[in-house]
View 1 (cartoon, rainbow, N blue to C red):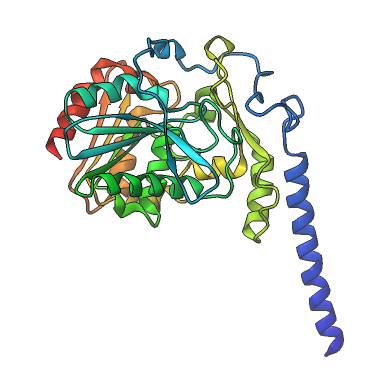
View 2 (spheres, rainbow, N blue to C red; view 1 turned 180 degrees about the vertical axis):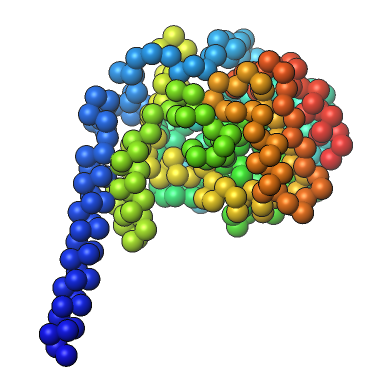
Length: 343
């Protein structure tokens, strides 16, 4: 009997050892050798990459001189986070979450429109690890911290405006974070959801390969870190797992070109099918036919399949709008305005 037990224990230990060896090998040696390393200055990873992201960033070359100043709010995490506020007499409040690599500035034209039309008050936060001067660019403290930060922002808003209704909105990866928020412990804190060309998941039918050239994931490392996470090891979650290809001509030092594993994981749904199915509130999904990173025509089927038992869902595909155009184009404003008025 003792021999049998010893054999079983040996086999188990051997299996665990092989599992750890594979996971550690993928984690430590899974970064593309030709790319930048973790030794690069924060926020500078990805600058060695050549070529075009495929995204039309020229649409973001706007006059931001009248943009509201950054303000701060407290969180349960270390330090304070920044946001911009667009005032309105409306008792509706919309929180707009920026996409990957970007920050609150991207929503200036849309937020200004919503505010000036009296449709809603608008908060555009700089997510942790992003913005002008984050504590650690491209990293957060733990998986799921974005959701805690957004819940803390909502708590502060409710302190000032207890009767306000909260609309959670997001563009691209920010839309993915909104979906994650909906499927998590805070999902019911939002009274409606607005998704602009949302990144639903890397293998979702709506996502083009590598988001149309915008993203370069460290696939082997992500697999290795996922394996380690599965057995409760999070020590290496700070390692870079994805880079973004923003053309040099459009950088100004406030962009975030690389994400740690824990930040990247926190920016997307846990299980997009389950997280989408958790949305019982009014939902508007918008995308443009000229989107360089997403298959806009596939949103309708995917949303219809997974957002079930919800009669307050609308999916619109707008002609000729690009991935950035779905945020900054004047064509999107009346659609969002009409939806907000109807809530």
